[in-house]
Each structure stands twice: as structure tokens, then as C-alpha cells.
Image (cartoon, rainbow, N blue to C red; front, side):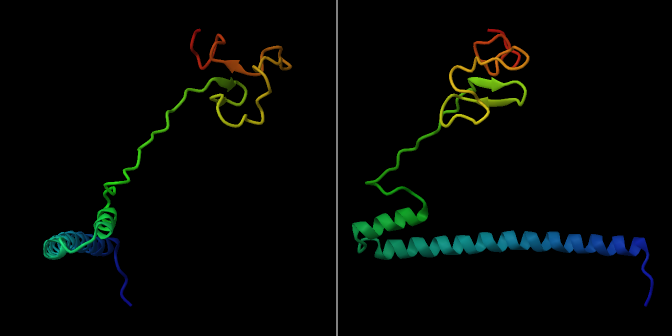
Length: 134
């Protein structure tokens, strides 16, 4: 068993990396060619049989391709991000005032004093909500 040197291992590794890069390039080219062939075949079949399809079949084709069906367009809703309204300074937890109340947040407006005598929660209208001035 011959003892390999560090240089020979590094050279072999470089050769393998180059071969891997070439194979990845070949894979990209092959996938591109296959997708072009598949597209041409689909277009050919649609032009040949497109007039024979029922409305339901056409809608299913559109849905399968990734489009929305013509009669049932889905309404896109985006959730509006809301700035936090409450902040616990000792744990840096925030709460927007929407949804379920966090367990460490007291009920009410959050003005219950803590041991230090300061409010347990600072609201946005408080003097130091994340370093901002009211």
C-alpha cells in the first residue's frame, strides 16, 4: 500500500471537482433539451386535440400548468404586518394587541406596577418604546 502525499490528494480532489462541474453543466444542457422537446410535444398535442377537449378538461389543463381557471380566479390576500403595540422591557417580548394575549402580559392596559415601581408593559405611547420618543 503506497502512502499518498497531501499534494497528490489535493490534485485528485481538484480533478474530481472539475469532473463534477462538467457533469453538472451536461445535466443542465440535457434538462434544457428535454424541456424543449416536452414543450414541443405538448404544443403539438394541444393543437391536434385542443378543439375536442371539453371546457372541464381545458380548465384542468390550465390548472395543471399552474394558471388559474378562468371562472374561479382566486383572490390574492396579503397579510398586513402590524407594528407591535406592547413591549415587555425585561424580556423584550412584543405584542401587536391582536390575537391571543401572551401569557406574561397582564390584563388591561398593562399599567400594573412591578417591583421596581415602573409599569410592567410599555405601550407605544410610553416615553421609551424601543428607544423612540412619543
